[in-house]
Length: 411
Image (cartoon, rainbow, N blue to C red; front, side, top):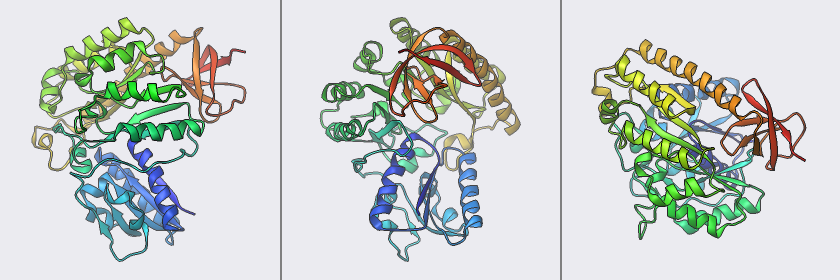
């Protein structure tokens, strides 16, 4: 029996389904593919730890390591005991590379390759379907090595996206999540340069059966009028936006080489909230970026509170090889960790207040596994009665328990 162990982003989870199909076509057995992540040193540590654990538990398993970490440092992973082969980001999607061969390292340049992934039918044990709409990034944030790992921006043609969504809908999926490395850059490389907003509008028009559409992450600096109109006026566009913020201090944002300012974020969040009151925000934050002072960090805390950003992905700055930020004056590691701890503590209180505000409201919930689902605003709702996965139910929120809202189905 084969297994694919996935680390990292939603794009990785989408690609893992393609890898499973490649293994099936290659007619392989007893293979474990470890789909790696390289966004931080901690992510790589966890990947290597998992590889060693797999080998220790069953030395007869064939271990193939693929993905971003391999793309950046193939030798490091090929030398781990038990690893039979490593595949880069383009090579991992090709069936022939999972056949038995003497080539232990297959890592090719991915800068110019197109992004037209194969079609898939479903995601095992998931009620929401992820779909790649673009890959790679044309920007060079000073802390990031993913541009090197993923290559330049390549958008999936709109017709391909629509075809994939139609397959998902036919197989019972009522929500799709658009994933990529920098999805607000969608279309800049396609003929006619169709924007993300234009593509989303076309999808909703051509697939009227699709009930819910969600974006994985956006950059506020690239939200145009077309996308803004959809965010505030389209009921099938979910009222939940995850923002790639990284910091709330303008000087740190400049040193990160981000494209937005603190003021742009606040203006965007307040404008959307005024036009669509049930919107909920999430954000990525790097704590302890080089040169970040306590006062600069406080700017980030204040920004999260001012925009009421309740879904937080905070992690300490990780020094990545060959990046400009690695050459900047570093914040002590213990300070970085303490700032992340503070962010999570503050966020826990904000999340509790947000959930409390939803008690007594009526929510539309997409049920996932174990009678737990996601409301349109991404809040986690659990039910005491058994409900069919993938179904959308109307519920009254009657309480909060252990990090979940408690829902009562409306007959």
